[in-house]
Length: 196
Image 1 (tube, rainbow, N blue to C red):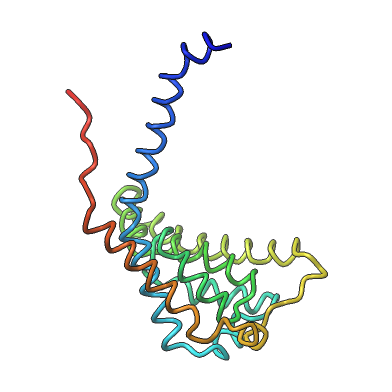
Image 2 (image 1 turned 180 degrees about the vertical axis):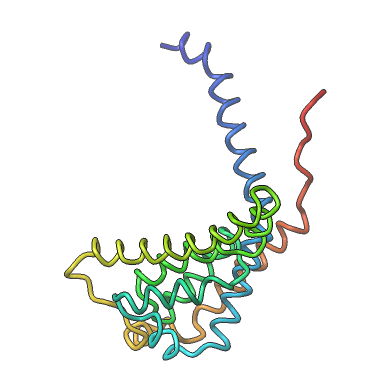
């Protein structure tokens, strides 16, 4: 047994080291986008009242899902930065179905993605892609409603506020996360370039 461990320990260590390095590089590459998402989430928390979110995105119905897809379509966030924004919307009272719809519509209809699609595939696909993105987002939201737990209590803005989610108790962890991401960006090292 010890011969086996001695023979394969360097290879196992090399694999674990490689995974750790690649995970760190991915974090460094995605940190600015997550920071942008935290900024948008903070703006949502500061300027959009909970009753607005509950009114348009709070129910487990087609109306909330469609509103989430439509409100998410013009938001200029990528697939990384949409996550903190979706968490902020959920804390404000948006339903899980609306969040599923929002999470899909935002990156699919991003202006950069449409521009790249136009450059690579032409104007027809550039028009087709955001339309299909909104349809896909609505479909995902409706599937979330269809397969949700029937015994689950549908969260409303009032229920989340009663649990303390709509006050400023969440501001300190958000600030700490933003500081950690800023330190990561400042200390960021360039990705290693492949050899000749």
